[in-house]
Amino acid sequence: MGWIRRRRTKTIWVGNVPIGSSHPIAVQSMTNTFTEDVDTTVAQIKELERVGCEIVRVAVPSVKAAEALLKIKKRISIPLIADVHFDYRLAILSIENGADGVRINPGNIGEWWKVVEIAKLAAEKGIPIRVGVNSGSIPKGILNKYGAPTPEALAETALDYAKRFEDLGFTNLKFSLKGSRVKTTVIANQLFAEKTDYPIHIGITEAGTLISGAVKSAVGVGILLYRGIGDTVRISLSTSPKEEVKVAYKILSALELRKRGVEVISCPTCGRCLVDVETLAEEVEKRLEHIKVPLKIAVMGCAVNGPGEAMFADIGIAGAGDYFILFVRGKVIDKLSQEDALERLVEEAEKIAAEREN
Image 1 (cartoon, helix red, strand yellow):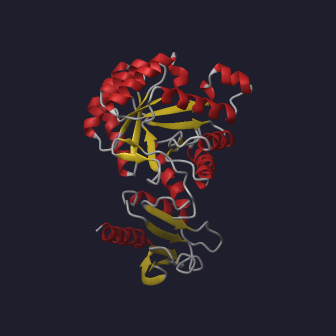
Image 2 (cartoon, rainbow, N blue to C red; image 1 turned 90 degrees about the horizontal axis):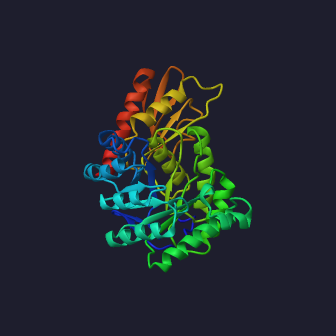
Image 3 (cartoon, helix red, strand yellow; image 1 turned 135 degrees about the horizontal axis):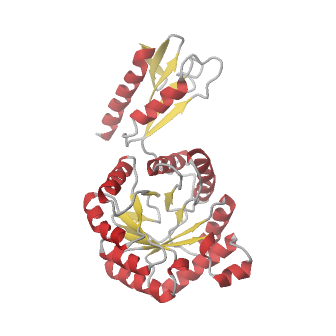
């Protein structure tokens, strides 16, 4: 895992999770529940925990939502970040109710003294602030200077906020510079990263639905990570937050930055394929999403793509006409009926995972 040289940064802590420097890139998501509905919100956070989410953010648009944080915190295991816009008093209330961090966009909080009040309490409680900068909240002076929300405008805005926080003596910060365009986001983050050592939260905002959003995120986030930029990541998708976490780990795994859970290798199918590879592969992923240790599983449609091309898989199956072969590290260990192949593969994979966990 040494082919990418990560940018050196300060280290901050969100609850018990370190962000920055050489620490693992933390995977985040955000609930899409009404935060004041404590039971539903906790249930979704626990589901996110199960698939590897390490930090969770919740929307705080009201006093009821801010007050709910106290109850939510007691029932979850991962750090909780309050996402606050417009009303600085909600950030204050969120911190008082135990948030492990707050996400604010100074551009929509209003007068700077309101940001100062948030920073004072955050400093007292020892929690970090994530400073968000996006295309819709660039200060008028900077926007007029560049004529549009360019990457340079985003970077200058973030650098200006960094300086103003530093003038307060507050440096427990991480920054996010996001746009819905890959090019804008990548260039803005690179410009900012060249001039500071603050940890950076990366992602492509408003990326889209599962497939289009995952592709756009993989391109943008992948470029930044390859350049060593990014200390925590959230993949923004118009779907279940659980899928955001899965996609984040797939991107990190593809870049060999982190390995977690099952990686299914499956062939693209062709005229030689005599089995339903797509359904099998999807079912394997679904049945084994609880596994935390890295595990490579092959689901192949014929003998050509079987043990040979997938010889480095921990375990796999390959269709061979009216039966399947089961193989481990390229060595065939059994012949199975189509009815038994899936169950046996899942059973053997769980055995291997259990051995590795112990």
